[in-house]
Image (cartoon, rainbow, N blue to C red; front, side, top):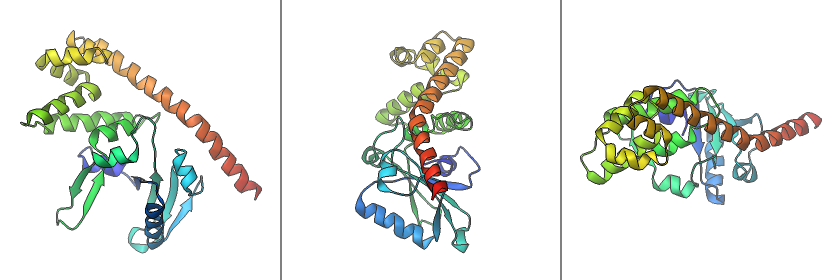
Length: 232
């Protein structure tokens, strides 16, 4: 997940770290700790790495000291706001293979990555737009089931007013179905670029507020971790 996944989906983003979403069970946490040990990764910042903190929604942070990846930051999460549980994420993951065929990399599916990016951070919203645009321009399936899934994804997530109007114009019946749940599509059916832009801005504002509320309690816990560290 995160910037490295965006790069692999073709929406280039310069990223100095790697973000991982993991399954929480004893065997998998032990495997993760062994991998971190191999990378000579040390914990940085708060909270402390623990099953409980991951289950509460915190991200745990590490810095690799192994010479082959010296300085690489590794952020680990197990749950995210508005995103399904790990089992569902893994079932619909995307797997890419390196050019030499030596390595398979599991990514969040594109819809799940887009949902995970709906945060209060300014940099995430242009990336959502680029991710969906790249998919819109490059993923034109001839399979009817896959095509239906693509249309549903674009109607739900396109954040480019002109493209949403174009999509609605080409698929008016499907657009009317999605307009009931998304006012931006309703505006797109009317070919009102100004109204689409307004609705997209409102969507973003709502998601940013939801993310702020989600993190309020977690931030208070982080402050408590910091106070404990300073006290000790």
